[in-house]
Length: 233
Ligand code: SAM
Image 1 (cartoon, rainbow, N blue to C red):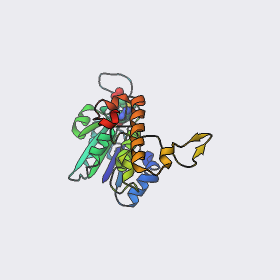
Image 2: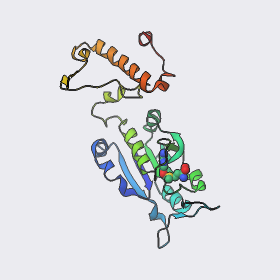
Image 3: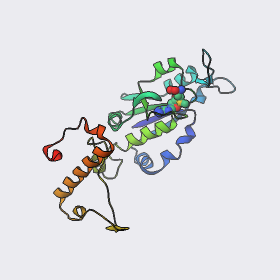
């Protein structure tokens, strides 16, 4: 998958994209990243990218010309999608991450200041995505969130593909509690079923605990979840 990031602060991506899972995905050749600095498409001496809003008001708005030019200068793959990071977009979710992993190219556009000129938005954005109902200073952190969530779904990126399967949201549930060594920590014991070696019982316990946890923390997730007879019991 090719990932192109359009931003005014491309340096912000250096560390998050050079460590851990994304680093490995890049090294394996499963992901190719390119950064595109919007200032490279300016024509004036000051490399201006923003201007005051028409109609007045606080803050600055990103000018359409350098932004649209930057996006249009990027070579597009056949199965490519451009995504504007914006608090006004559709809320990001695991479901959207799965939809995006099917593309050969993600072109992520990061706004700054008060956002981008509306005409630029209409021209460059195939889809608009928000990472939550709060306002950040720029689209860079939202883009990192999206990239991380999508890249770990690319087959071969995680060491063990199965580790995605039971993760929170994958089956419409939160994941069950996890334990590792030691068996007793500060007087708290690992649930005996996990030490039993009985895989059927362990699976049933995990499902029950996932349901219990979801019911308490995110009952909204259960609304559309088809429950089996065993779940109801
Ligand atoms: N004035 C805009 C509004 O009220 O909708 C907010 C602009 S925000 C300060 C600057 C940029 O940060 C946005 O253009 C967007 O790219 C990014 N951004 C901020 N919050 C975001 C969020 N929750 N999800 C995705 N992008 C966000």
